[in-house]
Length: 255
Image (cartoon, rainbow, N blue to C red):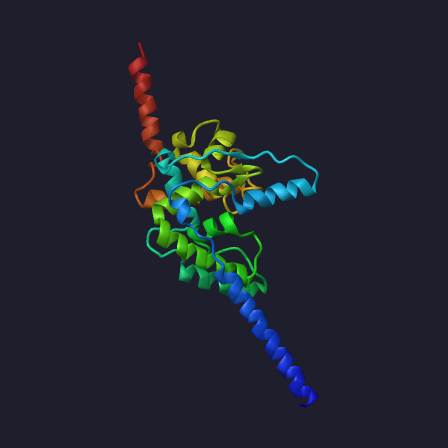
């Protein structure tokens, strides 16, 4: 065998080995059936943050309180679906059009970027994977997402997501987030608070939903506007009506 053929054979064997290894890695999928009956004891992201804190020699304070679906504010459920996965109730766990758009952005940027992940895919990542951005992890995320949707159904997937997603340093799930930022239960969140919580999900360790800075205000307004247009959100008061009401109240109280 010539040197060129030897090199080609070795390269082909290496490529096949890598492909087989990747296939084996992606096919080792978690059994998600237990999630239909009980909450997870921990998540991949919680353990990652725990390790990061230990590596820095810092304590890790976990704030995580499970709350059932019916005790989660409908405003928050609607805001999160609108912000993170507008087709949540229609697709099968993977939004192929959103993925195509994300891949086109990645090609243009020349690097992996965030985007295109459905709520089921984000749940898969939070429960079992990591924030790493590479094609193999993305493939596994997609496969787990399909399994979650098929095994658990969409309502349970949304319940799990809202209970495990990271919402700030050491803050996981909507109940802990509602208490930490607004001093109330998740069930009592109003429309504005819910939109603010949904607005920070792309980077919850950077943005504070209670501070209402320019980023939170802008994205909260965008989420509220989309929901208001769909008839799912309280309408903004008409300023003219407010002035009229104030004048009427003033006249009513005049001697």
